[in-house]
Image (cartoon, rainbow, N blue to C red; front, side):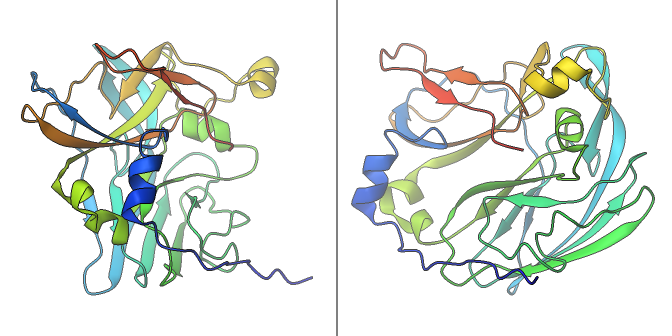
Length: 269
């Protein structure tokens, strides 16, 4: 039986729609803030050039220093979180992927409207340890701008490998980014991950963990514990937040604000 991917036309988001949704969405927040000390984590950005995003990604074990502890984790290109990928509608994405993990893995682009077949976003591709795989896809011309992410999706290893640290942002630029209020704002990204102090390098959880999920004792944003962000007083901040933990729910709030906290649930893996 063949599989035909469903791709429905998507209406571009208008300015009024964005301003309405941004007050309720947990993925993107836009607001005014005062200045404060900054301890800002940075991760490399891989941006498409001339209609092509050509990236080399390697999944491998790493020893990372987090919160004064040395943890055995998993990372893309040795970085937690992995490199941020940026593309535009109509771009071709080509990823030369190498698996340096001790077990099979693969890649999945969470939320992208791309085919789940061939060598695009096919979770049935199994890349054995020590092997390479070329992924290639085209971002549809009518694809919405937004914040997406990539992570492994090898059945039987998904939660273990994501809990080990394998996650990275995948950003699509488009009309949303040209809305004046958005364009004027300083843009920041927060990738929320939790880790086990005993090390999370692809260890399988016990049966209870596999059934109920697990939470790590070390909670990070962009690979750091308690980093802070700063912008000029009275300026605009566009904050994009990704829950890259396999099981944890995050209840987020802004200091000195009385509105209800933002609930970020772990996404289905």
